[in-house]
Image 1 (cartoon, protein in one colour):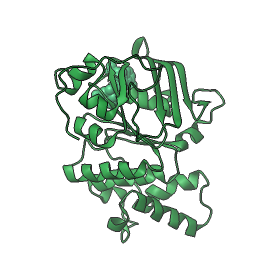
Image 2 (tube, helix red, strand yellow):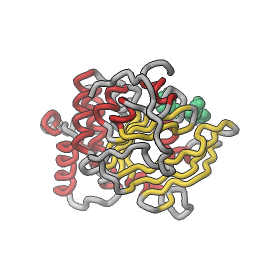
Image 3 (cartoon, rainbow, N blue to C red):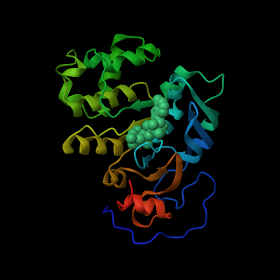
Length: 280
Ligand SMILES: Nc1ncnc2c1ncn2[C@@H]1O[C@H](COP(=O)(O)OP(=O)(O)OP(=O)(O)O)[C@@H](O)[C@H]1O
Ligand SMILES: [Mg+2]
């Protein structure tokens, strides 16, 4: 899809809280994550302001918006990674499959198993390719026998589109791979524990165009099994891979819309200005 310079924004009736302005007829609409009035402060400084969004299963949802608008902060709220940052306070609701992620009784280890994460810079463990994939499933007791572990490693590497490139060197260090291969190794590592959701924070921004295209194809394939939420500064990428797109600005979600509508006929002036390059 080409990104057209939208000349005007389309006035629309206000959507229900948390729902996209326009529904995407091809998308799935079973709820995965429900966010209501989510605010976050780093010390005294507010970084997220009353976010509301329903994220649906087995789609790709892209988060876009200028630097510093809270995209990474929001992603980290979904697997409680902000808990690791001192001075953070959070108010509001994040529910995953109907369960409050921030509830005291929520098991954080189990949560992070269900919500995998892939970062901007590929970060394989300083271990072999094999161990990068096998480690977490072993920790979570998903495999008991060596043969099961071998099968799981092969399966995850195949799913990540990396198997053919590494099958003869599984015991070489993960860091010996190229950047694009390392990122696919990180994706294999994330999917090896069979999560429900995969968070990707600018997963291709450190990669060349060919590796980027490979990861985009992979996202399209993986969304059949997983709910993918990805941050990108690349508007073409959002337009290519995402079913839904949320535009963030100064800690708020300004517009959440069907991706095609977001890029052809945005409902808000701020999203239009950002998408057409007049802002940010
Ligand atoms: N660990 C932290 N401690 C204090 N402030 C932080 C921390 N992380 C982020 N912030 C602040 O919160 C705001 C949102 O940052 P965040 O990293 O979520 O933005 P972003 O949209 O991901 O930006 P980018 O596109 O540059 O990655 C910024 O003002 C940032 O300075
Ligand atoms: Mg960020």
